[in-house]
Image (tube, rainbow, N blue to C red):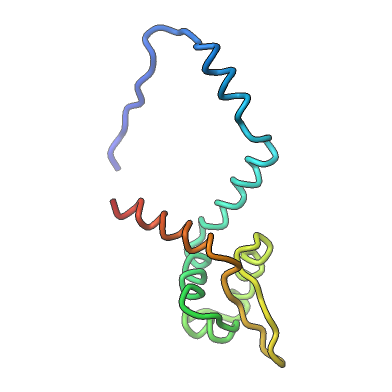
Length: 119
């Protein structure tokens, strides 16, 4: 990986008006922590694969496990994380539980991420 040099000011001078304005518009630290936690969920390739599959169709754990060639236990663990972060939702049909994306925002976030890495 190429080493990137970060430039810095030659003269230390704080622009108080800019700092004050930016601070007034910063969200609360708790809200920013929630946002960081939200994005951490996207840091696991298995969870990304599950979300991509759920773009196509809702599926049960058995179908997801078969598609990803993983154990149902491993899939269930990842679905639990995705559900806790409100990225997926579930519905029961008889003895089967089907999972789907919670809303359209998830697809938008991932599509924008893919667009960014493909540039």
